[in-house]
Amino acid sequence: MKRRSLVLLSILFLHAAASPALAQTTLSLTGGLNRTAITADPPGGAVWRSESLTRMSVGLAATVPVSEHLGLQLGVAYSQKGGRLSGLDGDILVTSEIALDYFEFSLLAVPTFALSSWDRSSVRFFAGPTMASRIDCDFGASAWLGTARVTTGGGCDAGWRDEVEAALDLGVVVGGGIAVGVTERAGVSVDLLYTLGLIPIGEGDSYWSGPKQRVLTLRTGVTLPVG
Image (cartoon, rainbow, N blue to C red):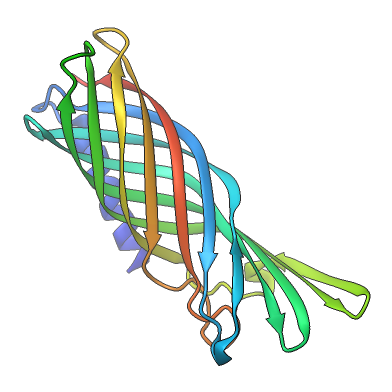
């Protein structure tokens, strides 16, 4: 099922990018920073503090016009996510950090409105689903036992399957940004996107019970028309 979904999204992306019927289809090369965190509700009423990590993303997106003010953006990106959790496990202070790398596919509606006061510029908004396939994962944990600090870690597939079991991450994206035409054939953009993870990435029998990802992405892009 996972492989079929990835193939379908890839076909849609390539079809949109190559469609000759839509002369105003644009391709964008994007890059940016992810401010990424993991939230979890541990059993037993314990409270865990969630801390953010700053990571990166790079990608390619094709935006196809549907009407005068609406487009459909198909995107694929290499996106780094993860986060840090810390809290008490009994009387022991524990800190866990996870770094996750994904190939992420998105299908976003893009309402766009021209800015009359700024030539060749527009403000735009984003909303839609995203699906990410995990390609790498590292897990680390530390605990204070009295005055001694104990650490452990490794690759998720090499011994941390309970903490990070899911190979897919599904979510929804909302956001907005501005696009500016530098020339008649090229433009630049700046967007702020928020991704809300919908499914847990780990098992439910530990303090990682129900961990879900939250990502705030600041991205810039260079845009070229197709056709």
